Image (cartoon, rainbow, N blue to C red; front, side):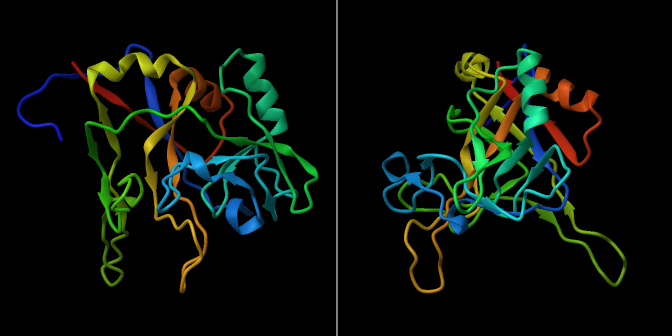
Length: 231
């Protein structure tokens, strides 16, 4: 954790935590039989596993959205948007097509990055619950300010601010999309009791180039919160 008085500035090429705020569309991942490389994640809870192939999905093919998130936490972009991003020379890596339950390719791509940042120096707007005692990489949740239904005061999500050490600054230039070390939600490598196999997903962190590209297309339900770095 960061203590004392510190100077904070934004990274030269600005980066942002990217969040889709609309209603989730479809299912994906573990619930659809997706295969993962288990040796790439925590040997106790599985957090941090990488895909072994294409992301399997269902209830997605009929959507007209160019970008959205599934109820399982995976981000999806349309083939059209994917090609437009590449035409702008924005480096999103080699994304893979998503597939249906029987393995047929769909005109969508899984928006994800195998590149990962180190643990944040400080995080505002995140709380920790039920964290794996082995990796301590999962169990992060958005902090909420609870509302009051009787007084018609809505629950509000606390703004998210991730702060990184100055030594981490060069890592942000690897690509226009990177994953956070922190993973949102709980993970379970095995189905035990009332638990099903489930892997927490990282936050997606995008460059201002990708942010500006998406904003120019006036895509709805997108939120960008700036990353900061210590000096």
